[in-house]
Image (cartoon, one colour):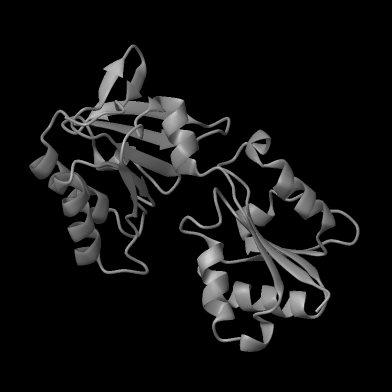
Length: 244
């Protein structure tokens, strides 16, 4: 097969945070597939076909990309952040499992800067020690599982990063998450709300759990929760490199 397929991360938003490797790969592509706003970040040019699709069409998108590459295309599937963090790399391999005839295809996964890491950098270093990352959306897993993971992470005194904290369709989940965290962590635990990080609309707010409100988060927000040692220094929030 002469075609290839790359799944790439476009970073959190700023063009300067797209890696040179991803930029070069996009310049070679014949086809770019992805969620509508991510494909809109790719500059059209002659010889390039853009294939935007809805956010909940990941498997269909992955199958389409495999077919295009098998036919000889130079295909790029775009994700925001990093393609392996709640994004398209996993969906691609899920689709590939059903296509043993294509498992010899030239496939590349190109990393990107995640919104979680960009948010942490904007706030200081709240993920400076052991941490975990949890997607609060219950579209692909049940809420009781999310709640169990939240509780165990909090009891283990891990710093945490939350993706997809609160949508218009399910505003109650994040409120429940905050209640659980207050029970386990207490009211003084530091949290950072990072909205539209690295874009002109960026907004960073660091508050305590007692001050946190559900409406402070939406789907463009990454929420970072410190561990018991996380503290402020000037306008920054950081987690020390040691545990006590």
